[in-house]
Amino acid sequence: MKEVCMLFLVAALLLLGVALGTVAHAPLSVSVVAAAVIGVWLAVFALRERRARRHH
Image (spheres, one colour):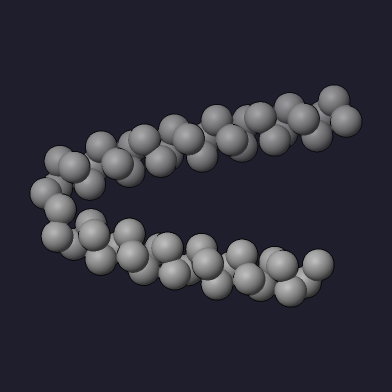
């Protein structure tokens, strides 16, 4: 299980590096919209996880 978590962490860091490289070349408005969409998605995910843990 620990190996899977480490693999996920490495993949997440790799994707973060790709995303940061893309953001450096994208216009500011595109970056802000993308950040807002990702923020909303993370908030929805967190709420769903919290609700699932309460009912489980």
